[in-house]
Length: 497
Image (cartoon, rainbow, N blue to C red; front, side):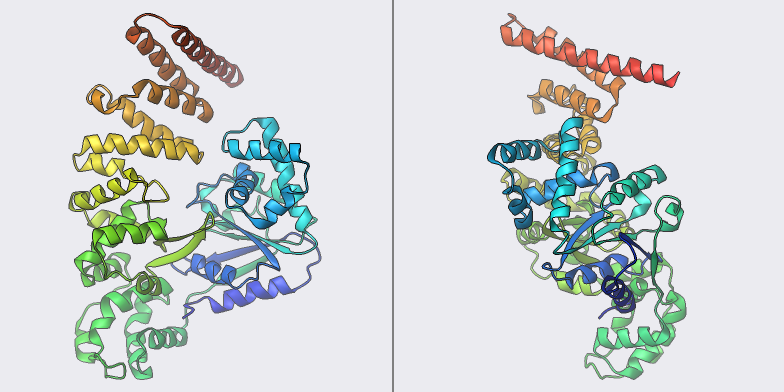
């Protein structure tokens, strides 16, 4: 079932076939909320032959991609995932050059301005080397997450690739607001479904008769205005009960007409929530609490340890509630829209999931999951402060590794804030202070960095017995970082005034 994808995919494919007057070709995908833009792009990407196309996809909402650093993130992921084309490209350099490049790549996300320029040049050389054999498709999703200045930075960097056969696809809720910065050559619109399309999709969804499909369509179409996602969720949460067991059985019209139906999101989701069993409620709520998406093998592993055997990912992808997508060369399962995640986060309290959180914690400790999921705040919410602190420590290290410094700072400060109450749970407290100070410096929050580093120096002085050479070296190192924070604070004040 396509649910509103066919015409948009056909338009995109036609644009790829045409020989444009110039490159890059800029395309915007415009749709209303719930029209399934991400799902359409999933299908579009899956149909492209990797021998003819090089596709890079950036979601500014899910991956915290920063427009100013998207080239570095591209190169980093190509290297980290062992992309054969990229590794073959690196083999064209001399051995010393390869070692230097690998040293820079292994140091990411940490990078100096000089090394950043070197990697950006590497990025452009790599794509130029492929320019004769492939077309390039760069997809930037959820552009509402970046501001006009970031959009301008993105445009300037993309202009450097203008000699390549490059197609750029933008999607987002407010893409029209970026028109001064993101000019587009073509617009692909995902319209709402027609009455005929809804009836055909309902017939396919339930494998039922044309008469039943038309009766349901007449009952729901004007309530949903042809919104594909609302329609699908209503089919599962509201209309399924009115159909007989046999696919060709006649629908219970009288019962259906006596029931209230609405296209309001609250009604749609409440009907769905009340329709599903407790195990499915918990499963979907756990996914919401994990951030709305999870690496698919991790999620299967979690459900296996929950002893949940009845949950069907395929079924819930078919309903439109979930979508399966590829990110960082791995498969993920997640909610198709944020409103769905918010609903399951809100309606199943964390206290009800306490034993399930403990299972996820144990899987983290045993390194049974490929990623570290943020659950420390949930443990704190249910009163398990010790588990919360231990989880926050693990999460902060993982977030620093990914270069997500703002989130790491929030978790580290959570540890610092509770250090006086639970000192036994934070045996490496000095190291936590050091990490937080360094993260604040990376973020340019110099006042906070100064305060944290000064506290670290004072703590070390108070706890020191006989001063060793290593203690003196550490004291000097901290003092230099404090001085650096002060210099940056002064420079900012001079620029400000």
